[in-house]
Length: 328
Image (cartoon, rainbow, N blue to C red; front, side, top):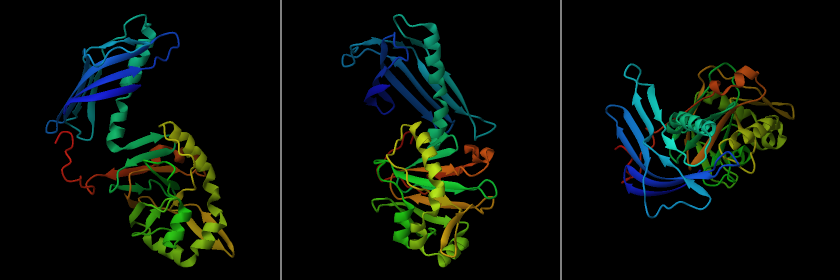
């Protein structure tokens, strides 16, 4: 889908949208639409409706058939009995025009309705795929990662949202903070030396200090013992492609709650010894994409994304002065 938008008023954007038909024997379709949005925070209602309009600056394009929409959109209201849940009604009324088979229209309508499921994820800024949760953060936002079972092993990456070539690396971080395991007050750095994340709290802080006191960060980093997490990098690349995110290189992650140790001159990265409810609280120093994934050396049923507990909070993220947010 491609679109061009013109803001008629705060809640009424005018859009030109064109859709590429999944069938090679049918022309693509385009629309000239006027959207209308309404939100009532007190009653917990949010509506978004669009309909086709005529506009001299929005003429049909070559190789497209101008379709028509009649009051298409969604109505969301909170559940009075359970404030944590919402009811969603989706209505689609579209005349595709021309020779357009019913089965293809039904297929498009079903897919459009399914997109409503992404609204909750977008509100939470969390994208979910197999064994992976991806969270989109603005600078200053705080997020928490928490374990859901004993000895849960998780891996964490962070990418600059504006430039996926810039990515957090543990080798650069360890050389900068001169520790194996970051502790509260430490930042995690990118391959360009930018502060990407800051550790605010660690439920296992005492053990982190104990590990740092017993291991040399330089020797541990150069030992290559964390290469055991390389398969997780390859799996992550496949999952990020589902969301159109394709960083050119995925470095080794921060293995959360892993236990670095030394056996003589040999360094090892032992599996997690985390307890249920252990947590890390971090702050984004830049606009970034943070990814948390289950390590692949766990049992298959434990690698499910359902066991990954990551959440963000806006209450520690004051809006910039003068910025107005929709609905305020």
